[in-house]
Each structure stands twice: as C-alpha cells, then as structure tokens.
Length: 198
Image (cartoon, rainbow, N blue to C red):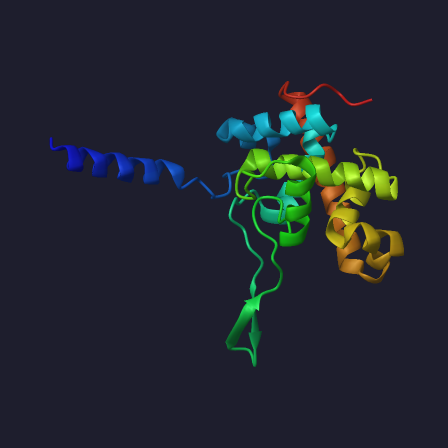
C-alpha cells in the first residue's frame, strides 16, 4: 500500500470517528436504559455532580428539556412572510442549548478554551457552572430542578424580575422538568446508579 494511500485512509478513518453521534438515545423516559445505551453520559454527569454539586437527575431532566440529548441541537429558523429564512430564533446550540454569550462567559470563567457545546462532558460542566452561578445570584438550591430551570431559561436577571410569571407555558415546562428529575432520580436509585436522596 502506497504511503499517500495509507495517509488518505487514515484521514478518512479519523474523520469518520470524529464526527460524533449527535442522535438522541432510544429511550428518553428511562434513565437506566439511557445510561445503558450511552454510558459516557452518566460519566459526564457524575463528573459534573462531583465538581459542581448538581444532582445527575437534575442534569438529565434539564438536558431532556433543552435538547432531548441531541448533541448538535439548534433552535428553529425564523421566517419573514412565512417563507424567507431570516436566521435562527437564538444562538442556542448543543446538548445544553447554551447561548453564544453565556458560553463565552463560561469559557472565560473556567479557562476551558477547548470546550464545545456538542460534547456531553463540556455541556454538563457548563450546566454545573451555570447552576452554581444561579445559587450565588438567585439563591436557588442545586437540587431544585423547577426553579433552577426557570433561571436557566430566563437568565439570572430575568428570574430575579420574575419574568417567568407572565409565561404560563414556561411554568408548565418547569413543572415537567421537576417531575422528570424526580422520575429519573427514582429510576437511577432502582437500578443502583444513584444513592437515595434525603
């Protein structure tokens, strides 16, 4: 095999491996099945829980709401006159749907210059960082999935102003996030992947 041909094969192989699997896991309603299919997700969330204190189940519920665990998720396009695309609804991208500016703040604050929004370990670390800022700025406990989600969606200043109170749909979504976090926690306990919370 010639040297250039081997180099080409190596490049194509590396490109194929580096593309990432951005699809959602098959069963989003069972934490144990989700972890069984994507064990790297649990490792990333456990690392984030150790570093930042955010319970795995709260991370899982937030990721479910934000991206359904799709690594390259983006917001929908906006259209003028119903047909002319005018850009996306926001700059939110990746597992955690982090906005460009907030992601830049995270990179500056943590020094993780190589972090990417479409990598699960970076996305969960971002959430841990953000949720801890929510504790500092808004006084919301890390295990309060409902209020942490409201501050995540509305931003720290929006949450402080109570902007979510004018959005009944968002209050329903935050209730769903809290319910899902409790469901995931129970499932993780049942399959031995989490200690019971007190």
